[in-house]
Image (cartoon, rainbow, N blue to C red; front, side, top):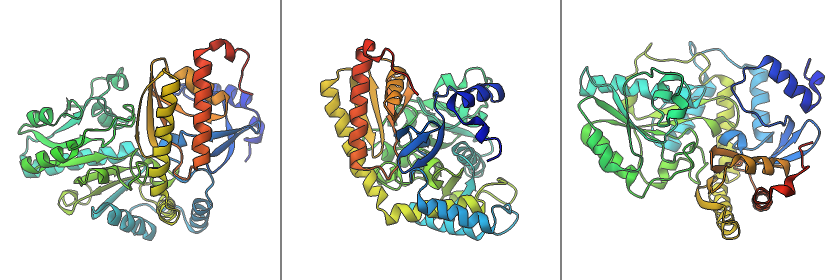
Amino acid sequence: MTGIRELAGTTSVIREADRVLFRNYKRAPVAFSRGSGTRLFDLEGRDYLDFVGGIAVSSLGHAHPALVHAISEQAARYVHVSNLYQIPEQVEAARRLTALAGLPRAFFCNSGAEANEAAIKLARKRGKAVRGAEAHEILVADNSFHGRTLATLAATGNARYRAGFEPMPAGFRFVPYDDPRAMREAITAATVAILIEPVQGEGGVLLPSAGYLAALRELADAHHLLLLFDEVQTGIGRTGKMFAFEHSGVRPDVVMLAKGVAGGVPAGVMLATEEAAAHFAPGDHGSTFGGNALASAAICAVLDTIEREGLVENAAVLGARLAAGLEKLRERRPVVEAVRGAGLLVGADLSVEAAPVVEACLARGLLVNAVRPKTLRFAPPLVVSAAEVDQALEIVDEALAAVSSPASEKGREIA
């Protein structure tokens, strides 16, 4: 705690952050001291209902006793030894995840971008073995988001993320999302894989048409390609199933996870079929921190808690309640143009800029974010209650009314 007490107020934190941190984030003027469940408390003691969830990361909410105990107990024994050695906790996390996904091999890393990088490397290595030495290209979707590293930026179908970092690594070709015919026509002798998000989270919570993922599965099988599902944001109960691919009945060859898999402890995972995984030999890929004892213990605690507390079912039921509440709100507030949801990942398109609505919600004690300039995203912890969903809807209603009548906001400031 040395030094933290010196930054006792939000103003001093903001001032010091501006002095010492890169200015690559646009941060809200609020700093938190603690959390409990779906609530966060700022340095001045004000509480907030968290419907950002650390960007779909805090699956168990804040300070869940099971996660706190698992992390504390593991840290008291040992945190890290590296993948030079056997890690029992990692083996247990892999055992549980592979059983849940029906994909028998696991690779651990530290983030979603790293999980996607691993999948890209695996697809290329396997593609050269199966389709020839010149095969290397991965088909990706317009409007997609796969990470911030150079390779995952190159695979991201949104030019604004790539701007300023060109030239991008080669080997990715963009195809319209939710268009099986376009995907079929894009396949060439150089293609090794199809990389897709079952739900485009950063793209605005966009869901594909029924049959789209099944059509991609058929294409991949027909052309001996890997089908890669980026479930960094949708995996581990977020959509009302343990994995979003379960809604379609389509199983990928490789699925990538992160965000909610360890409840806030940095962790990424790639799960794969035996055939795909066999193309990584010792030395082909690795991660110093990936799947260390602390992260693996957190993963096991998250999975235990999700099962014990019925949180996948909770995500399905309360996600439907949230989406229905926003639809009802749409009848009263024409500024809401469309609502889309998959469990507790819900997007609402607006006819106005979303940023002022986000600010108005923050001023009233609700955390949401703008995933697109005119799209709100809601991703509360999976432990959220019906009463909290209803409270969030009331605040959104007030915020939309305030943005529609800006004069009512005059003088309202965050403490």
